[in-house]
Image 1 (cartoon, rainbow, N blue to C red):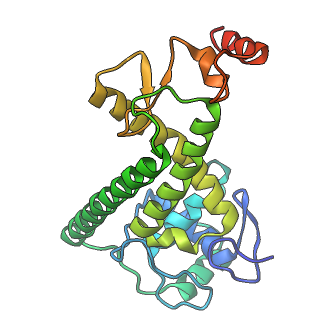
Image 2: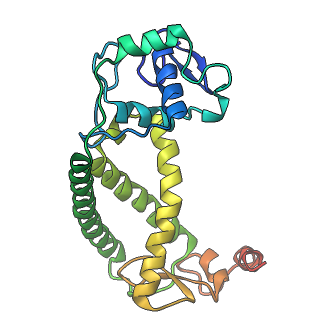
Image 3: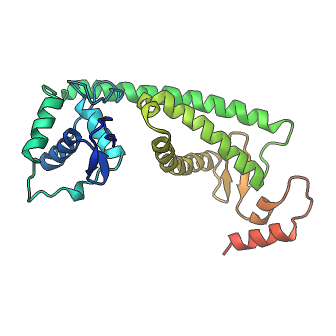
Length: 246
């Protein structure tokens, strides 16, 4: 089995994941000594089994992302791991050093600037997309479930591009890792975005979806389940609307 951290072929179950002796020893040492390392290259360093000077920051972040569990470490047995693990760790990554605080500050500032600039691009693309979606329809109208579903799909694409452009390391993860991280990110980020839009429009009775002013009417939720061309909601739409109020 391959190590989920570095890809080494001699991976075995360690701390809830598949890891080699070197990576498991590294994780054990980080937890035992309460070490927190930072990358000075924006978190894009390559982690390979034959690397001689692997970035500790990226290695530690990878251990955390794949789900290594600190509670599985038996500190009373050996807080720094077995002799074999310590030898593997020493041979695997000699001479690594954590970065200085000034270097870390500069790296974090560059990341923040990149995040802000890319988010401006995201907002521009979002406005352009929603303007095209209007296609002659009135602005500031109530949306139904099909339109909201389509908007959510659009947002998935927009935000995925934003994340990939802002955090290059995201591209190096497997599909399943990307899926898990994006799902955890998307829900919280959507709540923040919708909250921002409601504040901008000064409305608490509506969920504003875009700068076009389109919204979900919380006072008439049964209309949410109605088709665009239906003048009156169907029995099923009314039933779903009533169930949503419970």
